[in-house]
Each structure stands twice: as C-alpha cells, then as structure tokens.
Length: 369
Image (cartoon, rainbow, N blue to C red; front, side, top):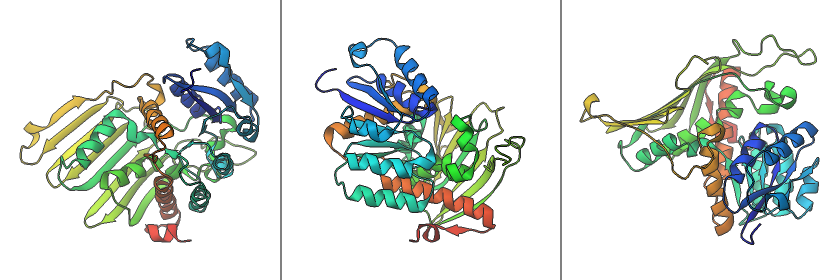
C-alpha cells in the first residue's frame, strides 16, 4: 500500500458488508484491511471475497484481518476509516464506539431504528466536531436518480410540487438469523427499506416534511414462517402520502410481492413548468415541459463513466464511496449527514405509526423530545 492509501475496516460482513468491501476494493488508493463480525461464516465469506478478487498491487502483502468484536478492530490501529454494515438494531451501540475512536465513518441506512437513538448519535457526534460521519443513503447516487435530482434542483421543471415514487419488487432477502423479519430489529419496513425514498423526497423538495399519512399491511410475504413460535410482522405493501406544506406533497407506492415488474423503481417529479422521471433498472430518464406537451418529452439512458463496480445498486454504492473518500481526504462535510439520516428515519416512524393508529402523524410529534 502507498502512503496515500486509505485503510478501511468494515463492521458487519453480511450482504451489505460484502457489497461495501467489493466497492472499496474497486477504488484506487483504498483498501479493506479488516472486517469484524461475530458470525464466523460471514467472516469466511469476507475472506473468500478478498481471495477471489483479481489481485491488486499489495493485496497479498496486506491480507485481511478478521475480528469477532468490532472494538478489538477499532483498537488495532489498522484502520483509517470504518464502514458500519451490521444489522439495523446494532447501529445505536456500534456507532458511538467508532465515534469515540475518532475515525471517519459511513454508517449504513437506516441510521438507527428509532428517532431517540438517532438523536443520541447526533449528540455523541457533536462531541467530535470535524469527524466525517456519513449516512449510507445511496439511492441519491444511482445515475438516473442523480440526473433527476440535478434536473429538479436546477429549475428544469420549475418549482417542484409533486413527487411520486413507486417501488414494486421482490420480498426481503434472507439475512443472517433472519433478523430482518421483525419490526423490533429493523424499525419496520417503512424505516428499513423506505428511508431511502423519504430522503429523496426531502432532497427533491429541499424542504422538511410536515405530516405523514399511510396505509399498509402484511398481505403475502413470510406468512408461513415461524421463529421460535413467532411469525414475522414486517409490512410487505404500503401507500404513503407526505405533506410538505405550501401545496407540495409526495407519495410512495410500495409492493414487495411484485417480482413481475420490468421497472422496480419509478420516480416522478412534477413542477409548475414540467415533469422529470427516472426508472430503474433500465436507467432511463425523461424530461418534458408543459409548453411542449407529449411530443417534447426527451428520453435518455443515463450512465456514469466513473463507476468501476456496479454491485447491487447500479453503481450507486461505488459513487457514494468516491464521495466519502473525498470527504476523508479533504476533511470536508459529508454529503449525507446525520440530520439527513434522522429525518429519513423520522418519516418512516411516522408512516409506521400512521398505519398502526389509523391517523395522520405530524413530524413535530415524532421529533418531539
């Protein structure tokens, strides 16, 4: 490794931990030197991922150090930066240890499973000013979504008034110990999965939401599963409306038993001058102006030439890591902050509460101390 290389440690070697490992290893002057996970098969998978990748200069010299306790990894002195990819419910106990160690950190979404824990993470981070703390809301970086955000934020469709997001996809994947089958571990589907989309709504409007109304249920998935006599309780479909005030609102249409879909995600933003859309996995982007009508709609397929590893998220995680690495090197602020992570969780919590209690829920209520 060269003197300018950044050495990463990854906490959690499950699906997302390995995704981060592969993305980091595709970046020049970045290397994963340590992984921590209490589950030996996950550590073995990390070793295999390193051994099975194409040999980069220095790989055989560096090797991969593995730990069963993240604190031992942090104390080892091996790491210049850390990625937290452990299960959702562990973030609130793991992140303070990384912050105390003074290392730059990218913590996977959701930041935590509760608003109270998110607030506590912000309080801990305030005691370490200047430390880079980045929340892994990587949907921002999917090339067609990033193109959509640029079009909206540059005024290409005028003042944005309506955002509609549809995700029609497959059920939750199998995780170690099936921890993601229960709300108490994930924060609920609308926190675990949909914090990405709530973050995009805030980014597109450049505003803070006021009220959330939601309806949802567990209709198809995991109904025949049992864990120590307990059935999973996670939602597999929902519709959510988010009000921003001043005639602006956003909607989310989620279905997790819709494998028969060509486009798993569709995003639409309508402004007073026009409309912009993005589609995944096709990568299509559309932009049209009201004055020109349907004949004037422009369509393109968006790529980002910087992407060296596509991974699970259409290159988004790779691009996210480029930004994180730049922040590490420059000492600049993270592009996705703890405040962004808090708000995306708060919106998910409000949506879950709205479903459970059959009423609209204000963000002031959810964010109240």
